[in-house]
Image 1 (cartoon, one colour):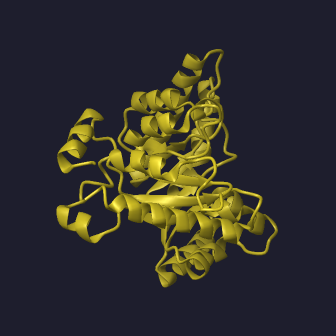
Image 2 (spheres, rainbow, N blue to C red):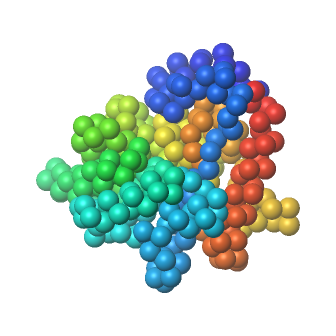
Length: 303
């Protein structure tokens, strides 16, 4: 069982890097609020979006009306050419405001490798991401999610180059009050030990992680979650398939969420369904049901 004393001890041990979402977590709040809230990652609907059956502008409404979720995580692929379109961003923000839906973050892909070896190329990639920092700020997000792909002849060299790229972008993010968070998303970033060291070496409070339950490849997912949680500013509950009891077949959600809560995290946990056996809608609802049931079970332990 995690006590307040144990939580404070863990916070001190990690330099307070994840205290932003927990500082206001008073005893009164602890008793009256759930352990975590739910958000919906737009990628859960990627088939529907790619088929043009809905658009990014529809996403906040669909999240609330179809799934009862009022916090969203965008994917830049679905409004790739709109990062600097103020009219478009204003319309998206208005729809969220009218619905009472909160924009949490934008997941960024396709803007280059932040760990480029050559300084000029690395700076170009940093510059490519800046428009998304500004868009995130406008929408009211707290973060952009980036990828940590390093270029180099060794893991150590790739780490050094990635650290430089993340630091440069995070320094820009600081000026806008936006976090730059890295997801375990293939390659070396799926190695929790490697990525946690990179984040520690960046050494900026707004550079953190987005631990994903399912993107660790051959690396032990529970070890990886534990290693990344001290830097977490978001959590992605990846799901693929479910057994007859409604449990995810690859990830023990009870075990994973204990690691999340033991780190003191009390922010949103994002639903990211990526399965093929059932529809996107059914997968999102199954993941939501599992998260809520697990949260209820854990509420008895974390009081």
